[in-house]
Length: 316
Image (cartoon, rainbow, N blue to C red; front, side):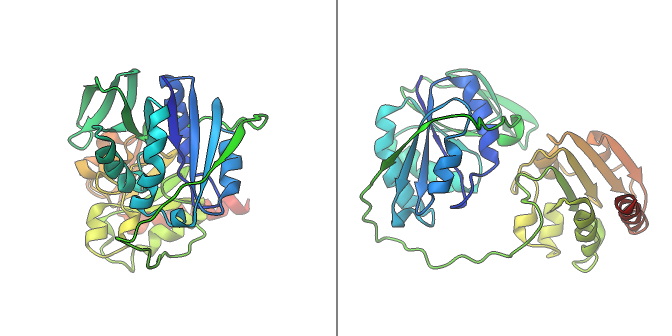
């Protein structure tokens, strides 16, 4: 089986999620190549060449690919499927934008959010917010997969690799849509999708002003900031903070849930964390059923005390 891995990147750096995807790919086949699509992103191609076991890196450069427009990306990827049995993406917002269009254009039924690989034709994926696992067997000649990165341990770069990089040119003539602009908030905090430590707040914080407790603690710990859907819906924080079934699915080393009851929707996004710490005043909150460590306390007392302790330890 010959596989093509589609690299997620920001134009300058390969996304850390790709190291988890490679771990999944290596369980599936030893014969895989990578493709980096974008504009002025040769640095990413160089990083992709250091992924362990990669045979060849395609660098597809075109100004029409600069902003990740789905239609343009599909035009570039469609002809490449001719030489491969399977095309693999990380399961993220990048792939969710592109993968359905690509699957339709190739007349392939994709297998998404793969959490386990049984064999080359059989995969396991979570359904019903992770409360059940479906085993899917495909009989298609070619397949498209997206990998649930939280389910696979990241591998290490092969710094001694000498993988070849092949530049490709593509012709893209699309005028149905155009890139208007990108609005994003600058932050010096770690990226939520790949952070090793995450501090999340829920509805128990009561207001957006009180959510600063979470942000201050995260800063002390060098952690990313997350939130439950209830906190996002209440307007405490923006949508991109959301952890859960309809938000980000993450697997940090440490996840601290503060004022979060632990609804099924939220648990689906963080239950793969290595260590889960919960702080809530309701001793019957469902979050304590999955937590490795739980503290039944008023968060407005516990969080300042925890922050003071962390600050003191860092000084010592």
